[in-house]
Image 1 (cartoon, rainbow, N blue to C red):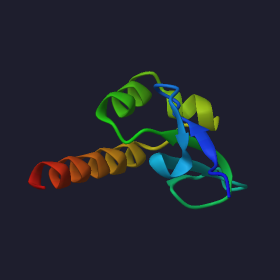
Image 2 (cartoon, rainbow, N blue to C red; image 1 turned 180 degrees about the vertical axis):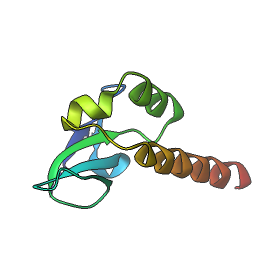
Image 3 (cartoon, one colour; image 1 turned 90 degrees about the vertical axis):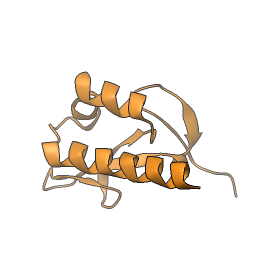
Image 4 (cartoon, helix red, strand yellow; image 1 turned 120 degrees about the horizontal axis):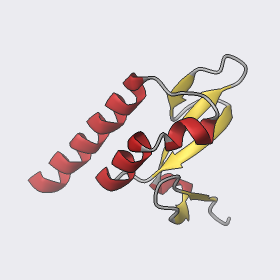
Length: 90
């Protein structure tokens, strides 16, 4: 079965969707959350440069057509720190 490809909203890199973080605007509540739910989605590389650019230029807000709460960015920064500590300890 062929993998589903997605594009990062910051760097425009195309890769299988498992390589990205998924941010979803849930239908019909318009609540923005990570990973799960049905609705409009945006994909972001798990890299500091992509996350910084997405937050600086409001790329998530434009892609989802809804403003994401600050807690979403805090969760993504936490995930990034966790990935960095795992790779540095290995």
